Length: 476
Image 1 (cartoon, rainbow, N blue to C red):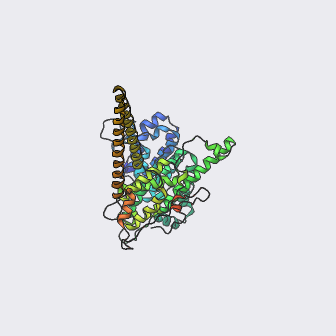
Image 2 (tube, rainbow, N blue to C red):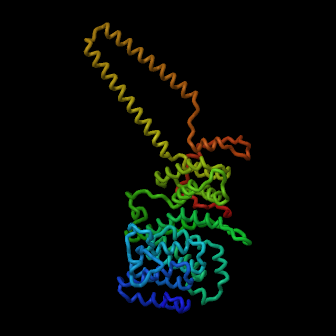
Image 3 (cartoon, rainbow, N blue to C red):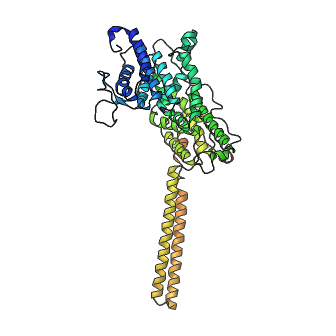
């Protein structure tokens, strides 16, 4: 009945709703083989009525709570039937033109499609929060879409217009979703470490999603501004809150203080602020244009300039990655404002040894060791030669003359090396060369940068740690 279009949308919607409740009482194998492909086909079909797709999506979400096999990818077809011929569980690596689709793929497709109606996207978002919180899925792309919806001004406007109490309680209500997301993000961060890692992994897809939405322009409407800085700060705040909660819980269970609960031998981890900065630099490296810098990209550079890092407590390897990203960005940036933002963050991590500098130091050490070995071999060979020659007085005088000649030649070589070193230009790191060669347009290229040694070497301690974006201004 639910596949018969002649029965009408209202009857078919009620049929899908009843089917979702009825199959809960059936055996798992029957649900997976027969009814899962049917519900997935209805939910993913773009030509289907929104109400019917929403009911199928809710039924899939309920079944996923009970049966883990519901999350496995399956192959779907337009001619799927309840006999299980099409849509049975398959191996993703099978050689077939039809792609396997999972519940996570279904939700992400509904959330990301520009043609998706707002009410259906809200239903997909609500199903996503339930599956994420219960640990059925951990998808950074879905998290990024949920953060975008939480800060969507159009969705907030719909919430203000929704004053009917009965409609607020219904699935698909913007007000209901806003209330759900307000509770979801802190609770999800506190639930497990993998949840916090998923939140941190959502930075890159979040930057890409907002970039796409910024480029969408509707005729007759003002362009919507997206508070990307507040989004990043919100994710960081929730992750830090989750980490504090996990630390307190571990300390309470063990009956010790926070340090003992964390364990002294654990590997040092990067802070959420550092992870966000690395993700942001990685996104800019991939998307930055040599010719021009967009307003959205300038806002991302502004976020970098407001980053506060305690270098002493961060993972050195992650700091090296950040410094390498900054060096590469310095060769791509042509905008003075963006370059100034990069300089602020680079001053913080400047003392960290980058990978290139580490390799250069290693090569110099190996060269010095090899030279010492050659000199030692030469000295041993000379002694063997003298021992075999008998060691007369004339020979000793000649040997002394040879030694004096070698020493004089060595001093000449040292003098030549010192002079050539002084004549050459001092090798400036890549980021510093970009800064000194670019020059500021406002000062007509006459700006000279004098570094204060005391201020550059000092770093904020944990007691004076400044929260991330503490001085952030208005959002661009």
